[in-house]
Image 1 (cartoon, rainbow, N blue to C red):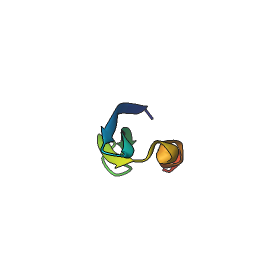
Image 2: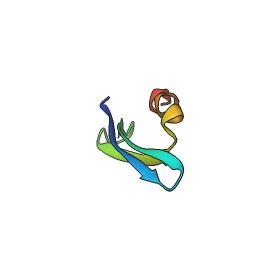
Image 3: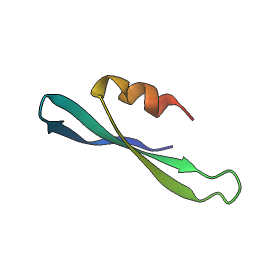
Image 4: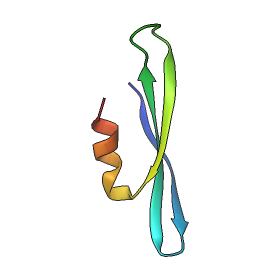
Length: 50
């Protein structure tokens, strides 16, 4: 499974990171991309979830 942090976004006083991970569908075997914007401290936790 591919994992990549794409960009660090800074808005006013909040620092946010946009993370994208590739998830394989168990039914069709196709890959989809899941995106999320979160604080940088939560990125590793989010990427480690299945």
